[in-house]
Amino acid sequence: MEEIAKKVPLFEPAMGEPAATAERPLPINLELWLHRAKVHTRKYEFAEAEKLLNKCMLYWPEDGRPYVALGKLYSKQSRFDKARAAYERGCQATQGENPYIWQCWAVLESKGGSIRRARELFDAATVADAKHIAAWHGWAILEIKQGNIKKARNLLAKGLKYCGGNEYIYQTLALLEARAERFEQARTLFQLATQCNPKSCASWLSWAQVEMRAENNVIARKLFEKAVQASPKNRFSWHVWALFEANQGNTDKARKLLKIGHAVNPRDPVILQSLALLEYNCASPNVARVLFRKASQIDPRHQPVWIAWGWMEWKEGNERTARSLYQRALSVNSTNECAARCLQVKNIT
Image 1 (cartoon, rainbow, N blue to C red):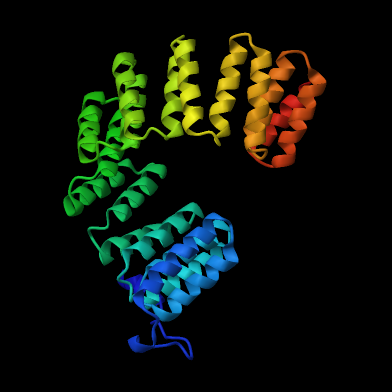
Image 2: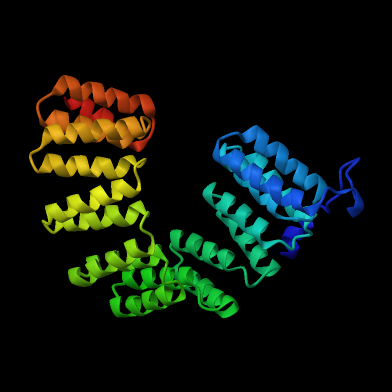
């Protein structure tokens, strides 16, 4: 923390910046502008959001929230240097005492591959506030990805020590135990996670998948039920449960689950894509085509739908149609891994 602080200059208000509290608008305006900025961001109206956040920082430079929001706004636009500058400015303005800014900056550096820098920033976040659970957890996830399991366990233990029981900490520890095939220990930790938050869909779903791996299908099914009860609109729960049932040969059950998932997530193309593939596997290519078409209309830029549809047409012997669908997939993105597989299949047909 001290080393980083040396590199970050003290915050100096810009010329003409209102310093006196009396010159500020009413505090309610800060909340209103932050909310409006969030709405603009959701609508991809980035310029409007940026303008509002800059106003927030002008009048309330000591509040960390505008810097966090602005950094995330820039990251969403892949303007990473600007995001980094926003976080640095926030750390200066809050005198390094806001753990949220340090943590968001650490996540940015981690995603960019600057692992050493990310570690320094996570450390700064925990120094700013030892009870900032997201910093301990985020740092542990970073170490897990780097293969430093012992270090990750130590960080998670510190998170529990300083912050008390937390569903995310317990869930991550449970997954580490499951990875080592210590299923009893994993179950105990999942129980603690779900006790911390019975409405945590992620914990129930992760636990269900661990039981799937251990081939405890009856228990897994009950846990899937808990997951959808905790969050009925969570499409991952319906989707993963349906795939589980399909793999068990329970086609009717899988179909029913996917249809429910679609009903509560009508704008999600992934569930329709899986339902289309299920129908094709049940020898109903015409039904599958209807579903693929509907999924592609919901989100024309969801590349896997075009690829899956093209694969089905190729299997049906409709090579010309398959090529056309693969071309649509490539028009979405021609450089990613999906595109590489698409080109490979396209060259075969």
